[in-house]
Length: 233
Figure 1: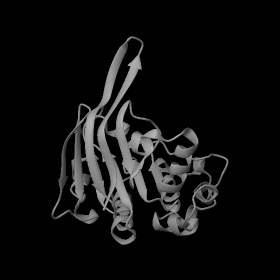
Figure 2: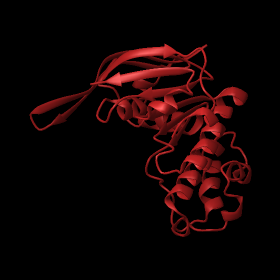
Figure 3: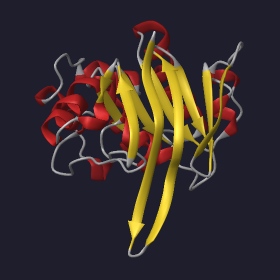
Figure 4: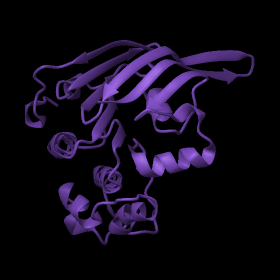
C-alpha cells in the first residue's frame, strides 16, 4: 500500500530579490513498510524533501499526501499533531537536552506519542543500556547520536525520517544501527527513509530514490538488497 505521495511538489526559497528552487516539480510515490534510501550530493534537495514530508516545511506548490491525507494544507496545530502521531526524526544534530539523563531524553516522547515503546528497550537496542543515567555531555558524539536514534524509535512512528543517521558512528556501531532500522521495517512494518550521500548504504534499500538539482531522477526497487553486515564502510 502506498503511504507517501508527492504530486508536482516544488519548494522555492526567496533570498531578497532572488529565488532558489530546492525541489522542482517532484512526483514520488512510496510504499509502506519499506526501507528507503534517498541518495544524492549535497544541495540536491534531499533534506528539503525530508523536511516537507516531516511537516517541518511546506511546499510552495503541489500536494503531499501521507496515508491519503493532504498534509500540505494542514494548519500549524494539525501539523504538530501529525508530527507527534505519525513521524519520527533522526537529525545530524542530536538535539538532546543537556540537563536530562540519557533515559530521560528518550522518555520525553511519552509526552507526545500516542503509543510509545519502552525507553529502556530502545536504549538496549542501540547498545546504551549501561549509560542510561549519564548526561549527554558525558557521552561521545556517536553515543549521543545513538540516544537520538533510540528516542526516535521509542516514539513508535509509522514513518521514521533519518538524515545521515550513521554519519557520526564507527563502522561496528553503524552496522548495529542499520540492522535495527532495517528490522523496524521488516518486522514492525515501519517506513524507514534515510537521506544520505553514502552509496554503500543504498545497497541495503528496498527502494533507492536518487535526487539531483531539486529533481527526483529515479526511484528504483532493488530485487536483492544487501544485509547490514554486507555493506562496505
